[in-house]
Length: 272
Image (cartoon, rainbow, N blue to C red; front, side, top):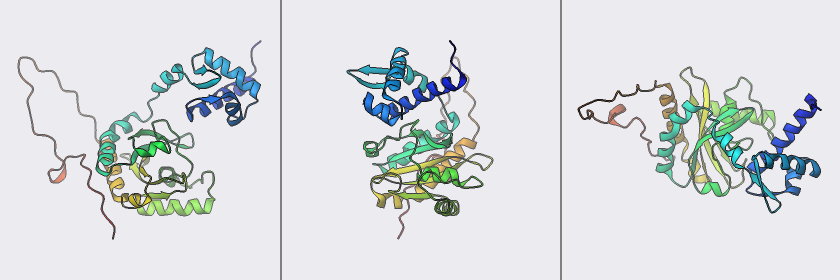
């Protein structure tokens, strides 16, 4: 018998709820999976059996984790391809210049701030800001992304008035700071990335365990976001045609204003 539309949606929602829980843990037992996904234990067990049969989930000694099929399908999702290309080098250079912090690029997707590019650091021991991760509500990156909307919609845990004040401050300063509000051990600063039409399309953020370091990084993060914006607006270089019978011509490395590399990251300014 064919499933009704209502039943079909319920089954899909339950399966995705289970995989969402698995996405935040290495291996999870059935009892916790069912509780965190808000499903009856029998329903969770039945859905997990189907997901295991499809290769979307793996089971070992009564514990579950995401399977290779989920990984393969996830790798086919390429959000913000141009943004990721435009941000790769600026993010790496900012992370290299500052050290011991995670630099990330996030976009707004489905009402959430989702990481689409990042570097690794000791922050990963507290929260993994890998591509595909959903940022916790009220993060500095989410504030930047939502502040550009006509009405700043408050995320969970924030009153509308408090969020509106933070959004207004972010628009005025061109950056947003958060000190332990989202994750108690972490502080972050974020700045907007603009399209060539002036629309905020992403947020660059630096996240660290030490809030004092974050307080000094605002200008460096703003500069990095500006570099990503500039790269995003720059048309892609035409592919070079292969030359036959002669060595490729060697020219000087491209330079930006005042002879600097167009991707150079300046050291963060210190505030006295």
